[in-house]
Every structure is written in structure tokens, then in C-alpha cells.
Image (cartoon, rainbow, N blue to C red; front, side, top):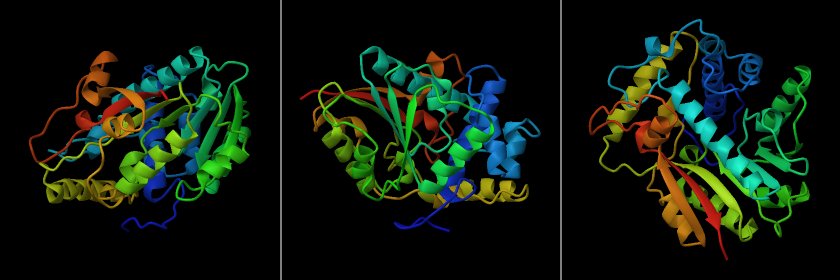
Length: 309
């Protein structure tokens, strides 16, 4: 079913299942000893999507279910998500080293950074996501006996609602510098919602605040019909294994502002790192290009931005 402005989901359906898929990729990367996320596999198991549990635990390998000629697939996800995880982990470590003591994880999903990273004693981490997602993760981690490594505060609110007010009600202080991440989020927001979110973060930020983002590029040269067809082919393969998630219906069409340029106009200075460079810097193979009609993750750019005003 195509996305709408008022749709809903859980961690086993629609866009919510992508958070579980990413956690499964982190579980594989953890087994491969390239990152350390001990909570990824237990969280995937708890969600209960058999397909993703089998992938996370190695009962099948991604390459067997990928579509030939597609720009990105399950085979490439563990390395890509490992590089991405390292990027955002380092971002928070650098922000803390600079004296920032407020961290905000937008659309936190199954992110376990509040439980697996080492934080300064006076750090506060705010996790924003839908109430059902927040409750599931908290309950599951408590059942595992997991203890947070910092003061973590759940902000159970849909990003389509007044999340800035909810964040401040949870104790966020807009008069102090803050560090934010938007990891794996913008591709599932309408272009105008991406802008509103960045405007809100800017409004809540003071000089020295930072944000790290995963920016989805505009690709007018790509054949969108061909892209969607490859996604549907992958969906058919997955459906035979009991997983019915059509990626072609999860995003929103429309031209997006470049994140770096958009933030620059609002007082931020950004450094961008394309996925291809991020993979190489972390010792991973690059994602092969497939031609002009199919985008790959190589075009995704990771920005670290700092506010000065």
C-alpha cells in the first residue's frame, strides 16, 4: 500500500519494517565483527518477522534473494549499514568530546546507542519515535536485562505531530548546544517534511549545535519506472519467503533540497561524505554501479553540520 500523510505502521510493516531490516544488517555486521551491536539480533528476533530473523542469523544470505541489475540489495546492506553505524557513532563521540551534553535521535527505531555506547556521565539522550515503537524497544530491552549507559529519555511522538514541544517537555533545553542525527530517515519523508524537520532543528539549536544526516540525492536522470520494477522483482522474491514489503511504495516522490545547501542558508556549515567514500574509508568494497537507469547507495551523502549564529 502506498504511503499517505496519515499512515501508520509497526516494526513489522511498511516503513517500520525498514528499521528492523537495518537492525538485521547490523546484526550480520556484528557477527562479522565489524561493529559491535549486541542488541541488534535480539531486537530483530523480538519483532518476529521470520524472514528478517533468518537473514540476521545466517539461515540464508542476502545475495540469494537479490535481483540482478538492481542498484542495491541485501548483499550490500551489512557493509553499508556498518559504515553508516560507525559514522553516526563517531559523530556522537565527537560531539560529546566537544562538550555537548544533549543528543537527539530522530526516528530512533531499533537504535540502541543509548545502551551500547559510552557516554559522559552528564549526557542526556532523547529518542523520538512513534509511541508503539518506543514501547516495544523499551519493553524488549528491559526483558533482555539491558541497562542504558546514559540518561535516556523517550519522546513518544510521531514526527508529523508537534515533536519539538514534546521534546522540550522531556527536558530538552534549546538554550544549550545539542547534537542530532537523522539516520535512514529522509528517504521516507516527503520533501517538504524534510525541510520542516531541518527548520525545526535549526529553531531549537544554538551556536555550536551539530546535526548528522543521511541525505538522499535527486536523481532526475534515473528511470523511476525501471527502479520501481526492480524493487517489485525483489518484493516477489521476498514474498516467496513470507516477507511482503514493497520498497517501491515506501518513499515519496518530488524534488528535494540538497541538505548541505539547505542548511547553509540557515547558518550551518557542513562537510559531506558520499557513501562510496565512507565505505572505502572503513575498508569495505564499493557498491557497483549498474548504469544510468538504476541508483545505488553510492549517491547517498552523509553530512555533519555545525550551527554558528
